[in-house]
Image (cartoon, rainbow, N blue to C red):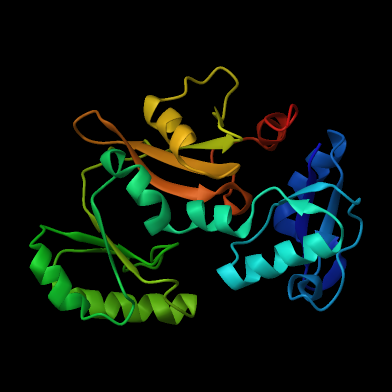
Length: 260
């Protein structure tokens, strides 16, 4: 039975971050061991507490950059436990350039560029009708959004992304725009190769099963949406530890772990 590790409230280090309080309570009620991880422990400045030796640990918290996640798994190892998801597996699902080649036929065409490239020139070379820009992990969520029609708009978009996010993580991913049906996006989770839907009786789409077979990570999310022509497309893969259970009840999210 996995041990679930949650981030601490920054103002009350012994308490769980309020965003994850319902999840921790639900896992605890289901019999799973849980604990919280302070910022000091996450930074490697103190020991993790409350984790049994040889436990398999699943982190449930905020997105972590590569260095942060490596420090977390190192802290788990120092506690005598093991992380379910290694740093390499974390990046397999967390960084778009790592999962895209495995699922290219099921997701919008994507090009990857260094963060310091001449992005306007690169977009002009593509000669697409429009562009969706993000870094390796996230898109811009402000009113501007990540969709642009003209290459010249890319510079301001990336400047705004860096301003709000603090950095461009990894590099720039440019995705070809496809027409999707509004409000058709659904999230699935995959644990040890088995895909789960937000309802017990939900049919698992073939594209999700392909992702479950191809992505080398023990726990990740798959977001799918319907294209205007009726084809189901994968729009995102994410590490399951840092993916919100969007469209899921907490009880259903806990339920899928009962036999792990």
